Image (cartoon, rainbow, N blue to C red; front, side, top):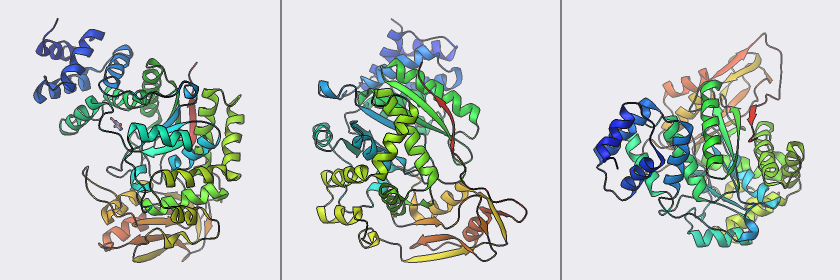
Amino acid sequence: MLSIPDLIKKKRDGGQLSDEEIKVFINAVTNKTMQESQIGAMLMAIWQKGMKPTEVQTLTREMMSSGEVMSWPDEWKTLMVDKHSTGGVGDKVSLVLAPALAACGCKVPMISGRGLAHTGGTLDKLESVPGFNVYQSADQIRDILASVGCCIVGQTERLVPADRVLYALRDITSTVDSLPLIAGSIISKKGAESLSALVLDVKFGRAALYKDLQSAEELAKLLVSAGNGVGIRTAAVLTRMDCTIGRYVGNSLEVIESLEALKGRGPDNLMELVTTLGGVLLMQTGLASDLPDGRKQISDAVTGGAALSKFQVMMEAQGVDKGTARSLCSTNTDYYSVLRKADHQLELKAPTDGVVVDINGMDLAQVLHHLGAGRSKAGEDVNHSVGAELLVALGQRVAKGTPWLRLHFDDPAPTQEQITWLENSLTVDPKAKPQLGHSLVEKLLLPE
Ligand code: IUR
């Protein structure tokens, strides 16, 4: 048996770690018998030398079993599904997709994260609803799945403790952006949910983790192989992330746009993602015969109101009082009276006549982040009311002076420099032809 320094040396020199060696490494991380400096050295060796797909599968499996692995009643076994996104701007897909899948008969124990850097987090969005409690124990999750069919919760303390240690050390050793480590981290948590099917929304573009399709596809393939390696039917969808998903960005504004979508009034690009990702999952579970059938079932669940009802009972099951949940889900009510609105709004105007050919989602997200919508360090508070509404769509013709963005802010107010950034994030081309309906889905990677 190799000692820990020998294991580090083997990877440092480009060797392939055996199943047993990876098990020793992860056990030592979980039991805290490995010093942090040794873990850091191993992470850097993995970052530099990479891992073979079989090593990634073993790493994922060992990380997954470092803590509690959830168990479900036998009759749910083929119905357990979840989605993971690599992070975007205005990405509220989970809020619409989880209840739509539940309405189609799936069980969705959606374990989500918080926003970090420029990307938003589903948990932060939901916490803008008064009373919504994202912390639920494994028993509570099972109860909510039995009564509702979906829940959206934070990771429990007991799920994949090895990832907690590794992720914190990756952050301080510049080893976050390692494909094997990303795959192990993401898929081990999905494995611990004991899913039958998983779909990954792997984004590429200027507002995504990976800027180009090729690197995003490399990550997608590794995630698909790691997921299938732990027994989850895993597929990936490669999607563009340059502008924004939908028209609202910011925590409570995104809840409003999700509710609008659940009432059948969602923006096309959001609905394209929801129906594609949901359609893939329904196909993987066998609830749909093919992708068009799956997409239609999801679309019907949304337009027919079944998904909205699921969202309403999910909110109640997760701590929101009945009156609040009812008013948010009613077609006639003004939701702003329930969700706190920022004190100030500012509208920006189009600088010239022409067609909107670009809106830089990354710049928009960064300004909103500085105004308090996001966090720079784990644990920081966010201001749920800070955000922006896009008042125009990509490809739309606008006249000079047309309002194109409504910024919602409290304190701090945007500086002149930030306003200039926002103004520059819009490109209007006087000569371009109007063209609406830009698709975000680039490619599907389905398991064989
Ligand atoms: N999300 C995770 O859960 N793990 C990772 O390594 C990254 C995102 I990057």
